[in-house]
Image 1: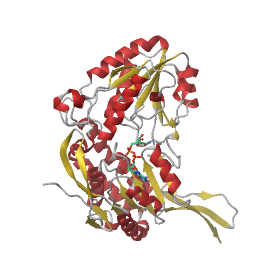
Image 2: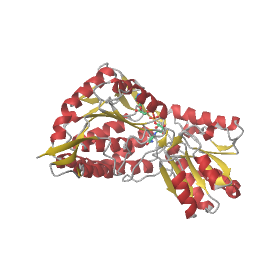
Image 3: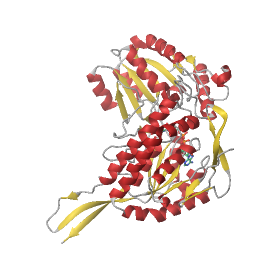
Image 4: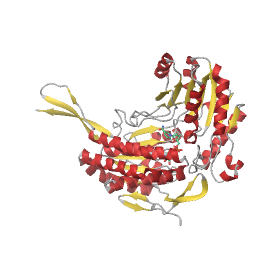
Length: 484
Ligand code: NAD
């Protein structure tokens, strides 16, 4: 029997007011229907916002220990359920079970981090004359809307829900329609941990309807979004000027290999960054700039290692790369492989395994692709593909490496493989990327370090994750002058 899932609005699990639903299917086997989810519209969003709006002041008035305790308990529950939820994550999004476990197991640490932030949400005092005491008071923002993508459906949501709740806000949460079950699981965990029922609302929906109703509402005080630049731009344009907004968006990330880098290390770094998570990471490596003397050997080694990657259902033993998450992603990746060929590039891999292998006929499987010898004007160099396709190009100097790495509208993550410290220092200072990794892949970040891009990758409202300013987005500061 098909499982019918519900929204969670004003403390009640309920279908969409309009009664319509959408399907959630397994990308490794599209015959596998995971369940039906409410296809909500503006009426559901209005009810969700009004429920959360009524609930958050009481939560904000609680002691910080109470808020921290809920998040600590959520962490314990998440730690206990991580492997079970990881299995569902693989079924819903497609990543391998190992990748899904890595994501699910990290959520406990995420919640603990923000439980700590609830206790540390300090104000400051300022030097003044003796007639008064001047201080700053941090208060919650109110109703925070959380809109998330599908590629890290647990961690993107946890790193927004965690700090929002820790700071005393209420949350209206709209997960991606590709991974609605993961959104639901997070809300269930928080409720089981003792979150006041009306403080969080879960509104599921397909397409732009729910997100647009959120951005059109005057009841949202802050909106935190992770997703594509195209959608982020629409959100920014449609919000009223007094809604604060945090936008974390796409990337066109490069790994630079300097002449002293060992080939083995360079190949391992690129392979992980480009093909891990089926290339569907915002920080995924999509371009490689390699010192000319190493170019031919690096291309050959990458082609060989990409061809050896075992592609298949994420649940199967020994599989190293799962399917793409949707049919749209599948068609898009194959289209870019076609563009690379039309542009005159040499392409190894990029085959549509769905057509080529009858065991994979019902999923969105492609072989990872290595593209070399592309012209400078290539679209592959500029546009975010969000799949396991990496383009390689030779460079003749560090100046050229910096120039080409930054020659993109995005500025999320960049990595450098070298032992040459002066080059590292210059590169790290000059590059226009928010995250600079040295001798490690563009992917993989610490949850206690600031996260965010530059240029089209972020509106830079406040960095996400656990840096010093992480709570700035979720709290307001009032300056208080206490006279005697
Ligand atoms: P997307 O922009 O298509 O969708 C993101 C979310 O926005 C979904 O929940 C979607 O339903 C919602 N949405 C769609 N239209 C909307 C509208 N008009 N108004 C409001 N909300 C709307 O992105 P996606 O395909 O889910 O995710 C892939 C993208 O996310 C890639 O570009 C990737 O680089 C980016 N991403 C960025 C980061 C980061 O931290 N910078 C992390 C993960 C993914």
